[in-house]
Length: 254
Ligand code: OOG
Image (cartoon, rainbow, N blue to C red; front, top):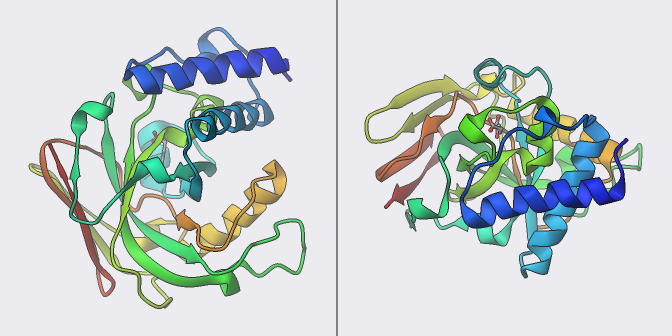
């Protein structure tokens, strides 16, 4: 376990990288950080966003798909926080100059209808979900060349940077739906089954992680269940995620 001073210093380094749009080397190059330290750094990073008047509006899962695990060379699920400053309207423009080296991923979003109490063993997270939607997540690792260890990426709030959610609709089983991510010159095709076999499983994984790391889940928050394909570079032009039977969401890079 590293000291509180070290946690604050490393959070400051990642926060400055995000604010200045300037990448930074992996923390693991010169620090020994375990997973608990990494979540503590993430907490300190979120405290800085709150000090900047941002509100936490949801959570996101990462590495819920084998394609993403293989792309980034890691093997376990991670959780990060979404703030209101990260939200982009469906169809809205997104200014590419606010990022370092953004990538985009097609996802499924869930909406929480009640506060979830991770410590209560009787909690049924699925009964606290009232809607789902197609979603796009923009990841923008603060690390040089997206090169990071498992602890690094947790500390960096799991590369969370921006997201857009399409029209909400009632919850249904979306365990095996085709997912298409279309950007200017790339089309990636996958399935919701890539998300832990069924995106609903991501909710259970989330509950376990929130229990372990003391992350609160509140009514109205959004849960991004994780990418259904590998990530594609975010470039100028329209980017669309379409999930069979539940619709689409897009943003326009400028
Ligand atoms: C980490 C974030 C991965 C996902 O859906 O798997 C992620 C990264 O690849 O930079 O959000």
